[in-house]
Length: 177
Image (cartoon, rainbow, N blue to C red; front, side):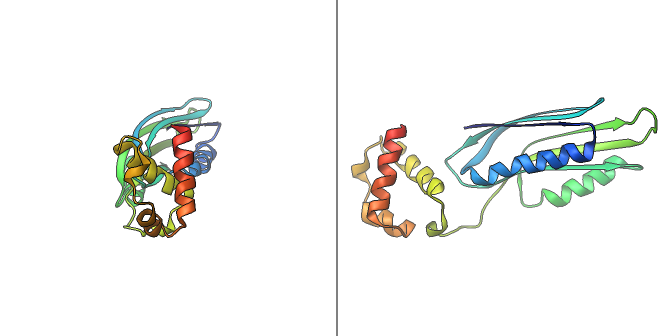
């Protein structure tokens, strides 16, 4: 699945705030970020464009971390802010840029990182329908799309749902494939 996030603003603060809000959509998409491409530009407007490739095979927490600093020692302070946020995360891609305001000569540093956050081993009964179907889709794909190889009772027990739910999931997955 491809996901595109874009924001433009005349201020760095509002551009990054908009980026963070738009990146919230990643929480609803099962899978992990496989690849990322980012563009960051400054001028009359700050512009950020991010494209992400999400693979449904493993379910990770996904985030876009966007921070800035201004004034003195901007890169060192940005590095500290970003370092705190990326702990325990797998960085897929990152970029940073600096910009000096023409009139005030105030310097800004902006850093953006796209990360996967491994989830603690969770029980299968806390998964959403989309997450459950992503796992079933992968299992069916591995077994040549033959649902007869699955023990429906055991799968239903693992996910803590009824056999009918699993049958319905498989039916939907096969329709989409």
